[in-house]
Image (cartoon, rainbow over all chains, first blue to last red; front, side, top):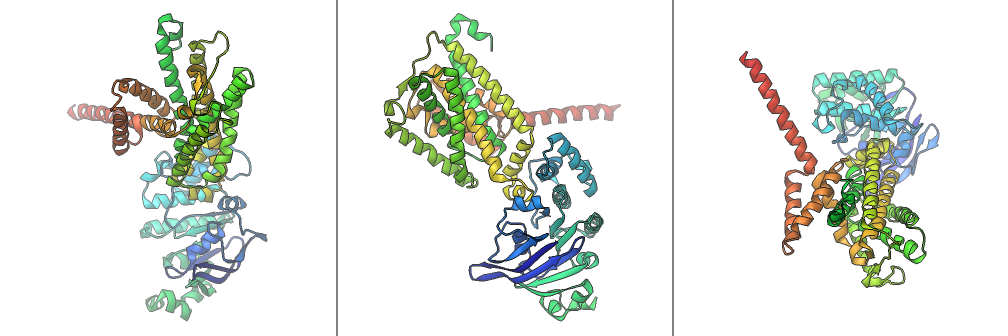
Length: 242
Length: 306
């Protein structure tokens, strides 16, 4: 469904990504892990059009996405959340989600209808009681859920999640995982960056590991957890013992 | 307000009100791009001036009916805004503000030095109004344009375009990532904004009867609409209306202190930005909040006492 072929990105002399290839099939949850600075977010930025790759191609259902603007890519059906949350601070929670609904761009929708749609999505993530609050007044957990809701509002086929569990406590992490599982049931393909191993190891079908911009491993969570290079580069000995 | 022109001795008031309507229209028009979309244009005098000069060209030189000339002037101003918007609206925040500010001065200097394009050159041009024209007609024109502007402002704010613009104001990248074509939305907002400002620029010549580069172009005009909008409340429908009226009132009061009026203007703006960036609307929201709190406390103390 979504495929990346030999993607490289150089910032000056620094290689943020070197010949990274990946492929997601429909309905899959694929994890993307690696130490800080491994190039995970850069890869997401390239997929969503915020950064142009130095070389390589991104294919979505066989169509090339290179050179398209973020809003065009979003309309193709690829949505994302951000590591550092980006709510529209001075809009209400409902309006935030309505922005996603109206910009789907498939057919024109009135503002009042968009708000009805938005409310349905808010119920899905459990924010329906906070619809009239300004987004800047939400807690971090709620802001992350709002990112989810907003991305879902664009009716994506592929959803890129950038560290949705970072900064959440165990209960909240649990809620986020439940939500991700429910999205799988709706047939949404998920590409997921995460540092919280407990979360990603239990949910992901497959995991890709980046290190210094290179893909060093790919496989099922179990394979990854036992991969010598991954333990060396990222997980550490302690994880092995658990 | 509507009844005032009928009073024969109220010529002065009619003029004052016309000026007040003018600033209300300008700041409401500016508010669409500056307030809703958060693109702080400091060059809107360009559209105002173009409106005025295109009106002079069509009405004065080509002898076209005044109403049609006003309309042409507004449309011309709006088209110009596309040409200006495509490069400048790619700039963000302060860079856009500085870019448009520069443009505003460039237009003033150009108009001063190109009498073949801008009729009259430095000295300006006196506009001969149609036979039997009176200040009351201008007043009604301004009044109707004010109403039209507020209606446009209302519909933009409550439309999907308005929501997109407000999303762009809060976070351009996030808006882009959610499928909003940021540049197109900004250009549409600028076109609407410059249409209103251009119409106002054309209409005001019917009561000033005079257009010169320094009176229509330049930083002072550009800043006025921004300040009026800040005074009333950025990004709201009625903020620029209240702000425009207050601004004009302030100008009339400060008329008597020619050496100090700019100083006082500046101080008011600084105080507002520091203490209440949401202007008069923000202050009234706070008062409402306090009143509600007081009422709540009163009710709870009664309940507590019984």
